[in-house]
Amino acid sequence: MPYKLDDINVLIVDDMKPMLDLTKAILVAFGFKKIHLAENGDDALRFAYRESLDLIITDHIMNPMDGLELTEKIRNDPKVQNPYVPIIMMTGFSAKYRVEKARDMGITEFLVKPFTAKDLYARIQHTIEKPRQFVKTKHFFGPDRRRKIKEDYEGPRRREVDTDETDNAPSTYAKDILKKLQDEAKRI
Amino acid sequence: MSTKQKVRYINPPNILKGKAGNGGLPETTLIAAQRVIARFRVNFEPEAKGFLQQIKDARQEIHKKNKNKGSNVKASDVEHFKILSPVMQLKANGGMFHYQLISDVADICLQFVESIKEYDAEVLEIIEAYENTIDVILENKLRGDGGPEGYELVMELHKACKRYFKKHT
Image 1 (cartoon, rainbow over the protein chains, first blue to last red):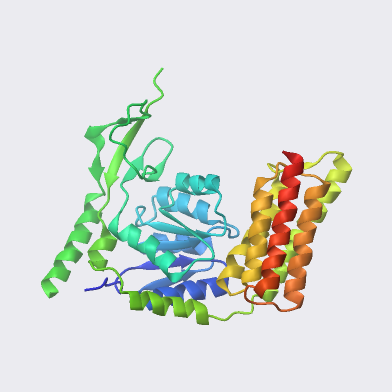
Image 2: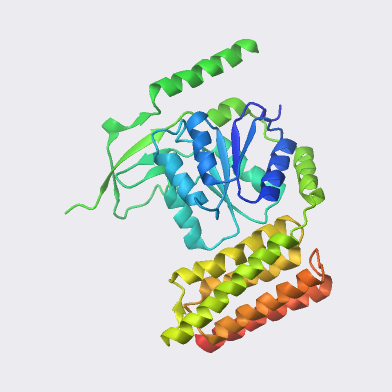
């Protein structure tokens, strides 16, 4: 059975109206139904205060708040309902240092424009099938920036794992999700 | 002194997976979605002209600044992004809205501008050549990739950038 995307709460953020419409049309073709639109970062952030979003697809360069600043706020603003929401950033930039900067701000996936439907699907599928654990340090909160684990790595380690503090998402949040999943299971 | 950072790992619930389930999307759905892109028609010219004007304004501003200061604007200065940003928009959105030639030309320009260290007279000249090219494409309402001529044009611009780097490295 294929993915069931109709209950996924997705927000598209782009200050260029045609791009907003096009991205929405692609998501509709994929099967998404709960699609919300924002034409700037401020509106997107306000939306994230109100709704628990499951996925955000945002443009990079926007005024007055760009996609990176939006991501930083989504990850760190306590008023945001779901700071763990996967964020896919669409951009025309492809230079490596820009990808690294985006990653350092808490972006989950980077999608270079122009893109095909398959490109966008690949990023969405990646967030569904290979979710990244989150890392919280003094200076960073976001998806783990390390994608590959080298088992034979013997060099110096920058992170000191504090196992006692390792936990899951806030319990009330997790409970809500479990309840929803239980209700879904009951209906089957 | 230790430089190790204390880190806390969090495994949030995979809500997306919980809602989406298994199985992925069938190929037919992806083909249908690609058809949506192919059929999506937008007159990108007004936006493209706006971005082009931003590039022209930024180039002229840099030219004036170079002249007044007696030294070249650096790629680390704020003016750099004023050129970079609209060039990127032309590359990104041109490609999405079937103005492939504009996208290809802007892509080369973007790679060029991302690689320079400062805006000397030659760099500004090359950027102006890009502006003129995009101007012509827009004036002639050239959509798509421009055919063999479009390809030649892109190659020529590419060679101009290569010549610049050969001379300066």
